[in-house]
Image 1 (cartoon, rainbow, N blue to C red):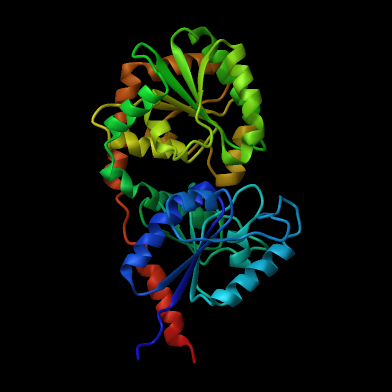
Image 2: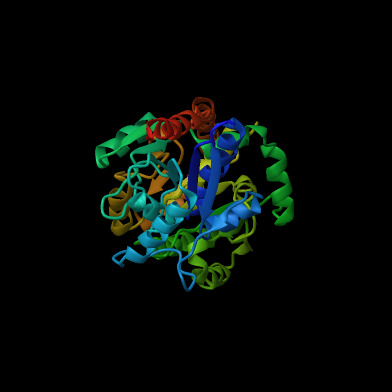
Length: 381
């Protein structure tokens, strides 16, 4: 009789984590050497369920799934310990939460001597309860690995971008055309997307106001595609009202399926900073013709300070590689919108995106996880 396979427990709370966990769960399952189990809380739970992935919901009594910054995580850690006692995994692989802690950080805090890994979405990001970081962070590239190791007492391994591997099979041109037809974007109109982040990010609401003011003169030629963050639904009505007040045509794509079709439709993607801009770059890298460009709305000192504290970065992910421009003052937004909608900027972004897509085919993420789980089983008395 063969010995039971080692177990690997995966977890996710945030949408970015779900985007990495889904392909990893499939790859580990296809590998066959380990048994895969997956737990998640919303909004990651909804994203994984939509992809028909078997996932166990995680929540505290009363339905809470996370603890706000500064809150007591003791109950969360106890729930994670009970989860570990029930599943008895030989390795734990988590996402990374933001704006508080959730199942990911609680599992790391309760993992004991188990091998632990965390899937990094934004370069330089890590989160922990009481300093209980994962032993190894699986990151996109070597710069992200160096940044992560310089900020935290962890090991980082560059594996490529798991979440973008499937883009190679997309017909990006067809996706763009279909979505633009769906939203009624006329050929003579430009589509400017605003991809919101939680309003708790300092300067976020001011930055949205700066964008609305910059787009007001374009009301006759621009259509805004609004995609709110899952954690920021309460701002949706106010944002829609502000755009309508500026005379702008709007399509509200908040909570409407995967992000990729909405990104593909855009001539310009705007946000404070978000992993969706890297999604856009990878899509553009797979497109035969340029999609557009990216504008980061870092128009307040507090937003820039928050990014530096959060990720150790002075500019959002992608700026250094030519994958977007950063507005650092309200008065700069209107001119940058005009520049980035022009053909030279679109061509330059497309060239940088093509280099990115070629360089970041995901390397093996499965092997270090499987070896760690097998190693723990071999070392057991």
